[in-house]
Image 1 (cartoon, rainbow, N blue to C red):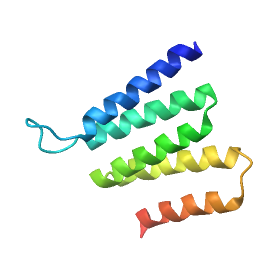
Image 2: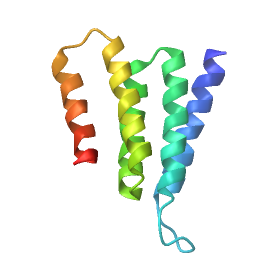
Image 3: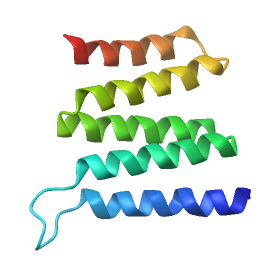
Length: 107
């Protein structure tokens, strides 16, 4: 199960790299599709217990949604990253940093 999930999350990240780059037939990157795939990969990494990889993928998804100007989706992924960080035993500085990033979406 774990190896299958790891392969699945790796394939999600590979699909993201295809969505983010331009080619001759595509003039704009598919940022919303890439953001969705990063969220799926983050979920699989979190289920495997790799919390740092999950958080990194959620932050990458947030950047994709922010570039697409999908503010609700970007804020939701930041909220998920804050929840993951809050469950870990980390200094409050990291949670405050994520909270500050989410504050920029509101104002």
